[in-house]
Image (cartoon, rainbow, N blue to C red; front, side, top):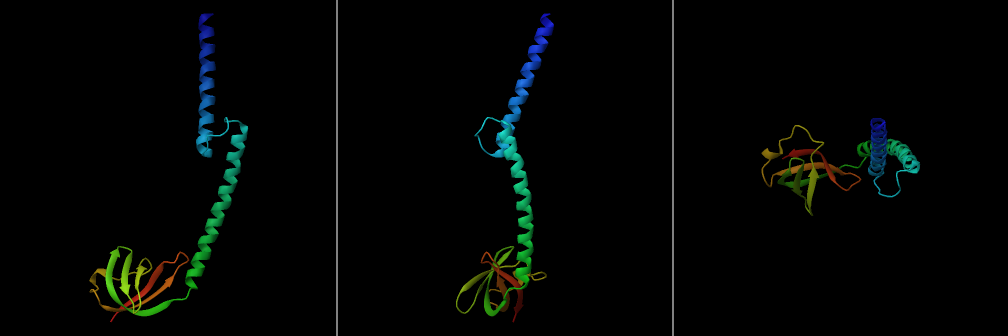
Length: 141
């Protein structure tokens, strides 16, 4: 009889620990400490899943619009003096009126390290929606 009582108490204790562990997990997933792990927390979690799906679709749509916009943007072409590389993805040039930082991610097969400082260049670039100058072409004169 004592063995059966001990096994029953052990099973109840394990069941309670398992239930408590699930409630803590729901709180962590929801990112809040409010509530007590009730079915309401699970319902909120289900709603968030629907919102995430909508958000993913919105993000994909936004990326497509951005790509379409970038191909339709006004490109700027002007003469400049090459200052140098800032990092592997950016260069700096001096135009007649200002110093410009240009992202080089769209330009392939150009060795920016081989261009001499103050070399006369013709640059072609556009501004993306974040205001970054994106280099599309560079010619060394």
